Amino acid sequence: MRYLVEARVKRGREKDLIAAIENGTLGEGSVAGDEYLHNMNEARATDDGTAHWVEVCFCATPLAEERPYWEEYFERVSVKDAHARKNCRDLNGTEAWACCDCDCTEKLEEKLQGQGESFLAKLRSENKLPSS
Image (cartoon, rainbow, N blue to C red; front, side, top):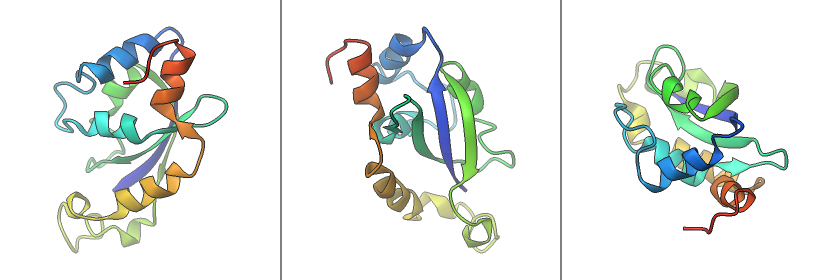
C-alpha cells in the first residue's frame, strides 16, 4: 500500500538527518533498505517546512517497520492512504507484493513534484549546507 506522509523534522535534528542521508545510513538495518533515501530525495517541502513524501509499506499497520527510523528525526504529522485501498492489488489480494512493480508511486511522486520545493534543498539551505 502507498501512503502520503507529512512530517516535520524535530528541532535540533536537521543536520543529523542531512548527514544520515548523505552517508547512506538513514534506515540502516531496516528491511525497507534504501527506500528511506529514495523517499527523502523525492520529498517536497511546503512553506512551513513540512516534508511530504510517498511511502510504500506492506505492514498490516501503516509504517510499522519504518516508524522507528523516521521518528529518530521527524515528528509525524499525518499518514494517509495515497489511493483507495480497494484499488491496491496487494491489499485486495489479486497480486501479492504488487506495489513492487506498480507505477502508482511514480505517478504520485510526479504529482508531488508540482508542489512546494525539494525538501532536501530547503533543509540544506536553512542549515547553510551546500547542495550535494
